[in-house]
Length: 200
Ligand SMILES: [Zn+2]
Image (cartoon, rainbow, N blue to C red):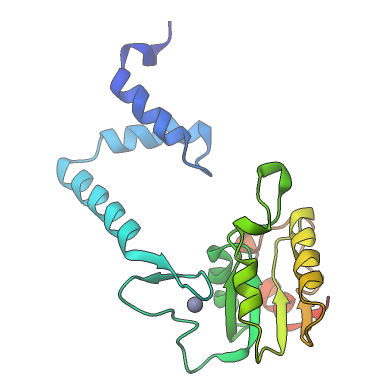
């Protein structure tokens, strides 16, 4: 007998949680239990913060990093950053890792993923056209992708698209283990990878 068949309300919650990427399936029941045990107060606050964040946080129209709807992009609008360098990352959380390393003070460009035909992610799903529009006065583009075949393919695709422009293209130095993810790299390794970047 399936226990959840007798608990339709909980079953619905579990089905929604199953749709949340990155939430390991073995943790679904723990997460559901955590929600069920919240006080009414905590639950109300949680739901309202979730809704508020979703409504208030938008993509910067230039670089696709998250920004507050009523504010400005902390990178694009900053007077202290080198506007001739763009570091291209797959997702916003990669910016967090690079910023923490302290190795970079230029601008960013968030692609919104990497090319992955099998998952239906082509160039149109990513912000590549937007990137090409902002290359004036840029002297260097840095590819900071995870060391995966998709990351390599994406870098090669972009390099090919801009081969007619006179822009130096670099990528992170060796030292990044194959298959590794920027997000989970330690600060020093990432610092070295950015600081000692090499010609692509
Ligand atoms: Zn921006």
